[in-house]
Image (cartoon, rainbow, N blue to C red; front, side, top):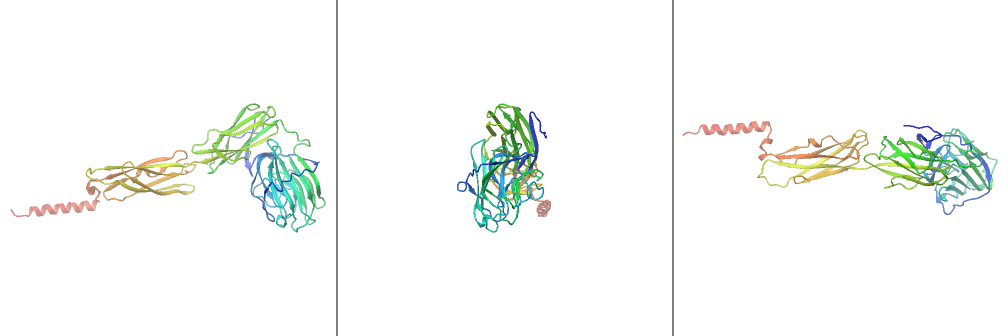
Length: 461
């Protein structure tokens, strides 16, 4: 079920691209010069250790940002002076490119993209500053050298919470004269972008730039966006129903069906700035799974029942990640004994083995069981496959003669998420074990008995 953008009761649902939710739009960034205001996280920030031409792993922003119509909660930092929202991005060696350029690196913010090399000196750090809804995510390059070790760069790239406003601050950034360098922003496809500078003929000293999407003033829209992403940790493709409920605005409540890898963006309008409260949750949580909620890139932990947002302001862009974690189930095996020899006195002991498989991954679980006494119970835990194809075989190892085993109830035993399974193995101890003789043994026994009878008939009176 998919919804298009509307002007009222708005829900937009699109595929998940590089961790983003939403559709690419031309943000039409406006560039303005602003006073020098270095945040200077050179001591307080978390260091990113990168060598020449390297890209960091995912770094959480601490909030959601709307960038060219998509919502992101993490970035990747290149040693060559830019940050990108794309996982698996190249490092941008060994010079910047004109902006926009559909080929090569895309979906980036270039503070000073050139052939930099932190292995030669300097540090790269990041930190989230401020309080909601006005937080800033800062990536700072502090005295980072060029590849040949000259003209160190000190600058910061700053992403502002929600609306995608970008600030660039420079203590010093001069060209090495050996390669082109780029400053600006570019969309995920490389079709849209705003170039601040490009080439080798410019440098910055104690100055700043502000890049504002949609207009120079950067006034926030009188709407709030809530991006929801769905994850199954076992790759279950099932759809779930997610709902947003708010205390004011339009809509007060709205639902959409999404699957893992899909996303939905709820847009709320007509509310009082700073007085909007909303919660987002899936209902119901799929059977056999536990829901984990992460609100605006925060810590995910079990027990949290929803993503909650309070005092939301105009223009806010929030993110909710719902992760369903598969729960293990228990397979119960019961042992019963039927004793046809009431005079037989023994401890009823048996062993069995189990083997569980599914069509996609093959063997899922295997092991052994032990039963002592009539009515004994043993079993095992299992993470069943989401498609219901998990089957278990439980077979007894016969340890005693004269015992007939019926384990048919435990063969091809289906196990589904949230359900578990149970079966019973019946052991019958036959009287003196005679009925357990095969056809050959029974024939031999008959001949023996016949022979005894003939001998008795020939005895003289």
